[in-house]
Length: 155
Image 1 (cartoon, one colour):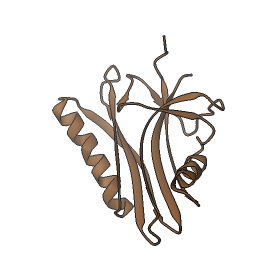
Image 2 (tube, rainbow, N blue to C red):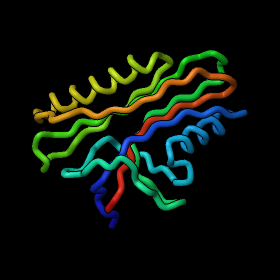
Image 3 (cartoon, rainbow, N blue to C red):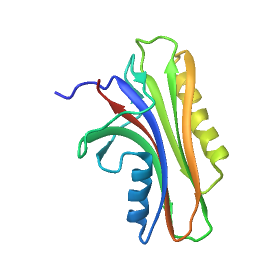
Protein backbone atom coordinates (compact mmCIF):
# COMPACT_ATOMS: atom_id res chain seq x y z
CA UNK A 1 0.00 0.00 0.00
CA UNK A 2 1.20 3.50 -0.81
CA UNK A 3 1.18 5.91 2.14
CA UNK A 4 -1.00 9.01 1.91
CA UNK A 5 1.14 12.13 1.44
CA UNK A 6 1.13 14.52 4.39
CA UNK A 7 3.29 17.37 3.07
CA UNK A 8 3.35 19.40 -0.12
CA UNK A 9 5.36 22.11 -1.83
CA UNK A 10 4.84 24.25 -4.90
CA UNK A 11 7.55 24.32 -7.58
CA UNK A 12 8.12 26.08 -10.89
CA UNK A 13 10.72 26.18 -13.63
CA UNK A 14 11.48 27.24 -17.18
CA UNK A 15 13.97 25.82 -19.62
CA UNK A 16 15.41 26.02 -23.11
CA UNK A 17 16.83 23.20 -25.20
CA UNK A 18 17.59 22.05 -28.71
CA UNK A 19 14.43 19.91 -28.61
CA UNK A 20 11.12 20.32 -26.79
CA UNK A 21 11.80 17.36 -24.49
CA UNK A 22 15.18 18.85 -23.53
CA UNK A 23 13.44 22.15 -22.72
CA UNK A 24 10.94 20.29 -20.53
CA UNK A 25 13.81 18.47 -18.77
CA UNK A 26 15.54 21.81 -18.13
CA UNK A 27 12.29 23.22 -16.69
CA UNK A 28 12.09 20.25 -14.30
CA UNK A 29 15.70 20.78 -13.26
CA UNK A 30 15.12 24.48 -12.53
CA UNK A 31 12.02 23.48 -10.53
CA UNK A 32 14.23 21.20 -8.42
CA UNK A 33 12.60 17.90 -9.44
CA UNK A 34 14.58 16.94 -12.55
CA UNK A 35 16.15 13.80 -11.09
CA UNK A 36 12.86 12.18 -10.05
CA UNK A 37 10.11 10.24 -11.80
CA UNK A 38 6.87 12.19 -11.86
CA UNK A 39 3.60 10.35 -11.29
CA UNK A 40 0.89 12.70 -12.49
CA UNK A 41 -2.16 12.56 -10.26
CA UNK A 42 -5.56 14.11 -10.02
CA UNK A 43 -5.86 17.25 -8.03
CA UNK A 44 -6.56 16.54 -4.37
CA UNK A 45 -4.55 17.58 -1.30
CA UNK A 46 -5.02 15.01 1.50
CA UNK A 47 -6.67 16.25 4.70
CA UNK A 48 -4.23 17.92 7.07
CA UNK A 49 -1.30 18.00 4.63
CA UNK A 50 1.21 20.67 5.61
CA UNK A 51 3.09 22.99 3.30
CA UNK A 52 6.89 22.93 3.22
CA UNK A 53 9.02 25.56 1.53
CA UNK A 54 11.23 22.79 0.17
CA UNK A 55 11.11 19.01 0.18
CA UNK A 56 14.26 16.96 -0.37
CA UNK A 57 13.26 14.15 -2.71
CA UNK A 58 15.22 10.93 -3.21
CA UNK A 59 16.82 10.73 -6.65
CA UNK A 60 14.89 8.43 -8.93
CA UNK A 61 11.87 8.26 -6.61
CA UNK A 62 8.29 8.09 -7.89
CA UNK A 63 6.87 11.51 -7.00
CA UNK A 64 3.11 12.18 -6.81
CA UNK A 65 2.52 15.53 -8.47
CA UNK A 66 -0.20 17.64 -10.09
CA UNK A 67 1.27 19.94 -12.69
CA UNK A 68 0.81 22.30 -15.61
CA UNK A 69 3.30 22.59 -18.43
CA UNK A 70 3.50 23.94 -21.92
CA UNK A 71 6.27 24.02 -24.51
CA UNK A 72 6.89 25.75 -27.81
CA UNK A 73 9.44 26.01 -30.59
CA UNK A 74 8.10 29.35 -31.86
CA UNK A 75 10.83 31.92 -31.23
CA UNK A 76 9.50 34.93 -29.33
CA UNK A 77 6.30 33.20 -28.15
CA UNK A 78 5.18 33.80 -24.57
CA UNK A 79 4.23 30.65 -22.64
CA UNK A 80 2.99 30.41 -19.05
CA UNK A 81 2.06 27.69 -16.55
CA UNK A 82 0.49 28.05 -13.12
CA UNK A 83 -0.83 25.90 -10.34
CA UNK A 84 -3.18 26.94 -7.55
CA UNK A 85 -4.30 25.03 -4.52
CA UNK A 86 -7.08 25.69 -2.10
CA UNK A 87 -6.96 24.72 1.53
CA UNK A 88 -10.22 24.15 3.42
CA UNK A 89 -11.33 25.76 6.68
CA UNK A 90 -11.92 22.25 8.06
CA UNK A 91 -8.57 20.38 8.21
CA UNK A 92 -10.40 17.03 8.04
CA UNK A 93 -11.49 17.89 4.48
CA UNK A 94 -9.42 17.61 1.31
CA UNK A 95 -7.88 20.53 -0.51
CA UNK A 96 -8.03 21.01 -4.27
CA UNK A 97 -5.30 21.67 -6.84
CA UNK A 98 -5.97 23.26 -10.22
CA UNK A 99 -3.51 23.63 -13.11
CA UNK A 100 -3.54 25.85 -16.17
CA UNK A 101 -1.14 26.62 -19.01
CA UNK A 102 -1.48 28.84 -22.06
CA UNK A 103 0.21 31.11 -24.55
CA UNK A 104 -0.78 34.10 -22.42
CA UNK A 105 0.80 36.33 -19.77
CA UNK A 106 1.31 34.71 -16.38
CA UNK A 107 -1.14 37.09 -14.70
CA UNK A 108 -4.00 35.70 -16.84
CA UNK A 109 -2.92 32.07 -16.46
CA UNK A 110 -2.50 32.26 -12.69
CA UNK A 111 -5.85 34.03 -12.29
CA UNK A 112 -7.60 31.23 -14.20
CA UNK A 113 -6.01 28.57 -11.98
CA UNK A 114 -7.06 30.48 -8.85
CA UNK A 115 -10.62 30.90 -10.17
CA UNK A 116 -10.87 27.16 -10.81
CA UNK A 117 -9.95 26.53 -7.16
CA UNK A 118 -12.73 28.87 -6.02
CA UNK A 119 -15.18 27.11 -8.33
CA UNK A 120 -14.14 23.66 -7.04
CA UNK A 121 -14.79 24.73 -3.45
CA UNK A 122 -18.13 26.26 -4.39
CA UNK A 123 -19.51 23.12 -6.00
CA UNK A 124 -18.15 21.01 -3.13
CA UNK A 125 -20.01 23.29 -0.68
CA UNK A 126 -16.75 23.58 1.23
CA UNK A 127 -15.40 26.66 3.00
CA UNK A 128 -12.13 27.90 1.51
CA UNK A 129 -9.48 29.07 3.99
CA UNK A 130 -6.83 30.19 1.50
CA UNK A 131 -5.48 29.85 -2.00
CA UNK A 132 -1.78 29.42 -2.71
CA UNK A 133 -0.44 29.68 -6.23
CA UNK A 134 2.76 29.73 -8.21
CA UNK A 135 3.48 30.21 -11.87
CA UNK A 136 6.09 31.09 -14.42
CA UNK A 137 6.23 32.65 -17.86
CA UNK A 138 8.94 32.43 -20.49
CA UNK A 139 9.66 33.91 -23.90
CA UNK A 140 10.85 31.13 -26.19
CA UNK A 141 14.34 31.47 -27.66
CA UNK A 142 14.61 28.16 -29.57
CA UNK A 143 12.64 25.42 -27.80
CA UNK A 144 11.19 26.53 -24.50
CA UNK A 145 9.12 24.97 -21.73
CA UNK A 146 7.52 26.08 -18.47
CA UNK A 147 6.37 23.93 -15.58
CA UNK A 148 4.46 24.55 -12.33
CA UNK A 149 3.60 21.76 -9.92
CA UNK A 150 2.33 20.72 -6.51
CA UNK A 151 4.59 18.00 -5.15
CA UNK A 152 3.04 15.69 -2.54
CA UNK A 153 5.30 13.68 -0.25
CA UNK A 154 5.57 11.89 3.09
CA UNK A 155 7.23 12.91 6.31
